[in-house]
Length: 97
Image (cartoon, rainbow, N blue to C red; front, side):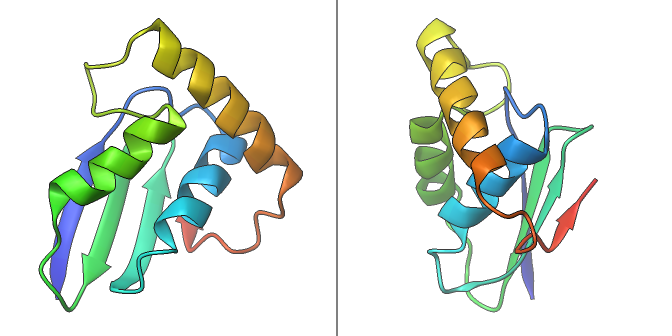
């Protein structure tokens, strides 16, 4: 099993985590998605090779870029993504800390 941990900016709460989880679930190769809010980390597991740029691209579009690369526009996008995530049920999360 291959594992990849991504550290991102702007991950603040369960709403953010839910939005991220929903977006990453579209990648059928992912077996597990673990989101740690306190660390700003997302750990992905797959039987296939994990392609870091592919997942970071999706996260960046949602307003959650790689740690240390956030700007004001992305911070604004993250607030919108967070609000959307708060409106969706969070029962689909594998793990949120």
